[in-house]
Amino acid sequence: MIERFVRDNHLKVVDERSANAVLRGKITQYRNSVFGFSSTVQAQEYRVAIQVSVSLKDQVKNRELWHDDALVKTVNYFVVDVPGQKARTELDGRKEAIQKIADEILSRSIEGW
Image 1 (spheres, rainbow, N blue to C red):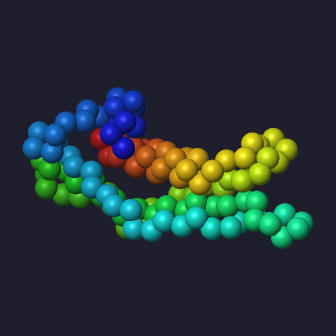
Image 2 (cartoon, rainbow, N blue to C red; image 1 turned 90 degrees about the vertical axis):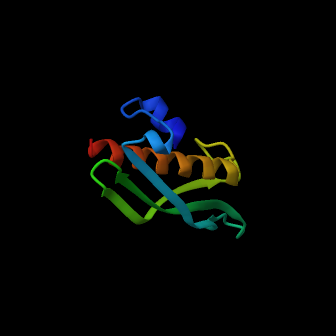
């Protein structure tokens, strides 16, 4: 998240004591499950799903700007080469899902400013 906020540069990342707003979050669920099979009934497509609980609080006005107890992002990936896509790993899927979560949190956070 820090990297995403720094790269965007709309809001400045500082220590909590100096912050006008504080973002808090935790992962509440993680799943990596089979999503598709080949004709020989072998798993070839998986879906990573990550759910987080997150909130942004305005420290100056002492109020919550937004929160979501069940923000979920998913990514499908193939573990075998298929036309147009190379095989990927669970780690690849996880990284992409995390990036989607970071983008969503950033978008919701800068809307409030």
